[in-house]
Image (cartoon, rainbow, N blue to C red; front, side):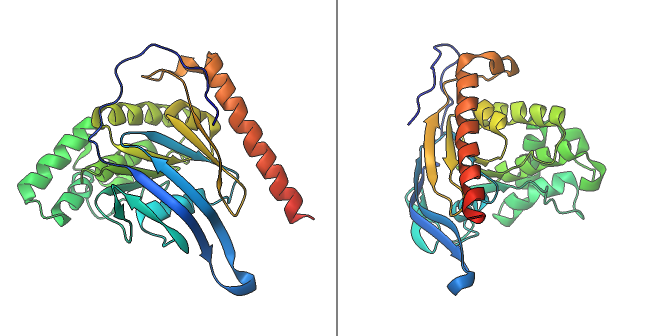
Length: 279
């Protein structure tokens, strides 16, 4: 494990709910059978503590999203298993909120009703669900847009609605699959800062898939780097930047070293995969 330079400043640690522990044990995931089988993830082990913010990096097609989907319950491991708070993951559940790159909002529902939908499905009364939706939309700065429809919002605003919707069910784990990948650079940076503010407030465990090295270093407590397919975790290191994170930290030695290490590791894996494909 690589320990990047630690700096002793910043506020107290993020408060946690004590929930949100993720344990991935011996997980392999294969799609198809016989000679056409695709081995996406290979014998992967991982433990994430409650309240941690962990990013997964790796070459294109290395199984990052597949592993995330196994934690979400959308994909069943071929071998091994996933547990969240000691309970085996067998299907999606309200304890795991999911935010995708594509905004995946219900286009026929208003912004408010999109956020209230989960609590209503969980058995909350209309008044309770409405109060929850109002609270989370206010938190992401979109309460005054509650009567709008998703198509009337910008990409960044839609993604903020997606985060509010995912958090409205009070999950112990927030799973994010390249959620800012489709945004322009400035909006992406604003969304990263907004996400960190939300995370500090709730202390929810976050598992975040990205292909952007700078994004991973800026956001994460830990960065996991996966090998080329079949994916497995080949690096697991702590980012020693203080919190709260600010954009000027890109000039700090800890940031530069973490970024360099990620880039070199991923470049080596991408080169190896290219050579294997052309052998």
